[in-house]
Every structure is written in C-alpha cells, then in structure tokens.
Amino acid sequence: MTTKTETLKSRDLSGFITKYAIYIVLVVLVIGIAIYDPRFLSVSILRDILLQSSTRVIIALGAAFILITGGTDLSAGRIVGLSAVISASMLQTEEYGRRFFPDLPQLPMFIPILIAVVAGLIVGLINGIVVAKFRVPPFIATLGTMVAVYGANSLYFDMKPNQSQPIGGLRPDFSSLGTGAIGSSSTYSIPYIVIFAIIVSVIVWIVFNKTKLGKYMYAIGGNIHAAVVSGINVNRYLIYIYSIAGALYGLAGVLEAARTGGATNNYGNMYELDAIAACVVGGVSTSGGIGTVPGVLAGVLIFSVINYGLTFIGISPYWQLIIKGVIIVAAVAFDMRKYMNSK
View (cartoon, rainbow, N blue to C red):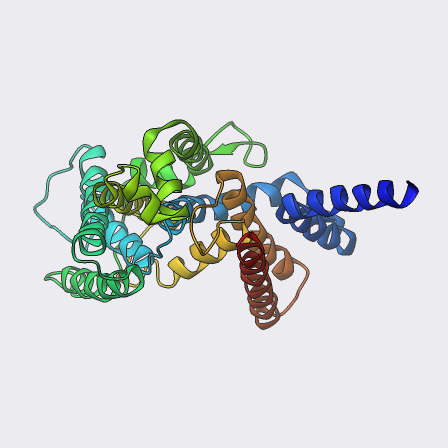
C-alpha cells in the first residue's frame, strides 16, 4: 500500500514538474543570478528586462500562431525590418537634414503606423495563400518570402535621397511610443511599449482560448485531416492565421523603430529564430496543436534573462549562445519525447 502511495506521489511530482518546467527554469535562472549578484533583483533591472522583451513577445506570439498549426515562419524578422523602415521613413521631423521623403508633410502618426502594420499583414497574407492554396511547405514558403522581403526592403531603403543611410531624426511623438512611460520616476514607471506587449498578449490569449479561430487553429495543428473531415475550411483559416502573424510582426517592427530611434534594412535580422526558440522553450509543440500564451511569455523572458542576466554578471556572450543552444535542443527533445509517448 505504501509503495502504491509513493508511486502516486512520484507521478504527481513528475506531472507537476513536467507541466510547470518552463516556469521552474525561469525562477531558477533568476535565483541563480541573484545569488551571484543581488542587485539583479532591483526594480530597474526588471524594468530593463521587460523593456527589451516587449517587441520580442509580440513577434513570438505571431510565430506561435503558425507553430500551433504545425507550420513555421522564417519571414518574421524581415517583416519586422520592413515595417520598421516604412514607419521610420514617414515619421521624421521636418528639421532633420536627411529626410527620407523631403517633401512629405507631417502626417498624423497613426497613418504611417497603419501602413507599416498593413504591409506586414500583406506579407503574411501572401505566406498564407502560398501555404494554403499552393500547398508549399511553410518552411520553404516563408524562406522564399524572407529573401524576397529583404530584397524589397533594401530597394526601398536604397531609394534617393536616402541611398541606404540609417534612418534617424524620428518625431518625438513617435519615439515616445518606444521610450516613454507612465509615471514620473524612471525606475518605477511603466514603459508604454510594455503596456503594448501586455495588451497584445491579452488579445492573443482571448483569440487562442475564446474564439472559433483559436479552436480551429489547435484543431488544424493537432490533426489537419481530422479538421478537414470535421468541416473546417482549413485553407481559409490558415490564410487568416498567417495574416494575423504578419500584422503582429509589423506592429513589432513599428515599436522597435520607436524604441531604438531609427531603422535600417537589417532590422529584425534573425529575430524569427529567437521567436521560434522562445515558443518551443515555452511549450509550443513543433508538431502543432499545443501552445499557450503564458508559456510563450515565459520562453521570451527566459532568453531575456539569459541575455541580460549573464551579461550583467560578466559571462561571455559566447557562453550565452552555448547555454541558449542547449536549452533549445533540450526543449525540442522533451517535446518530441512527449509527442512519441502520446502516439
């Protein structure tokens, strides 16, 4: 009887660790760095980590849409760069000496932002059509889009009179989206960009858990053939999902330009890999059908803590890359083990 009770307790403990492993890892990372240097637990450090994580959260949430359907999106980073360049090029001050559009009047801020987000949505729409209608594997479809978008963005960036010069001189009202905050104290204030990330996270959680789109997204990722048989218009919803992801990348690009005070055609380079890694570490299955918003947020925070925390205590960036690589491989191996055991 005792043995059976111990076995049940062991299973319960194993189940708890499996379910909350990502959060346990995050807590252990924070505690480990804080033991080495207690200053890491200061409010200002937490604020900096959240500030750096905000755009990455939005990109990762966009990538999560695709991964849950069983696909992948390699174009995310280049869409971020495209939207950053588009928004920055149209939101420079009149006094700036090297304006991208010298004769462009000062537009209401929402117009360039909307244009940039719609540009991301259009690229996502193209991805969705290529994947859904032409049956091109998502990896190949988005790889092609990644290259094409970078080329198009570079041509735009190289137009006269800019000719590939970094875009700067952004309007204060636009820059404040990325650098402004609620509160008078720089330490205890809440950055606007963090608020944007929270709002997007809440909306995505609602979509994942309370809407038909979310329900069908999980169904497509879980078993696409069963989804078709059950009457789901898979092609239509795949197009919706890729379009939403593109719009989220576009929004992230706008906020990244505002946060950094400028843009170049190389913005967003490799961001898609960080986003996919954060999703996988956060429990989004590479096989599709599984993933949560809290898990994605935890995945992003883990990598932010690694980047910021290990730099904070003086660990070489090369060791940081090794640690990140090991975590990614371990997360995928764990995910595949769960997938094979479920078969």
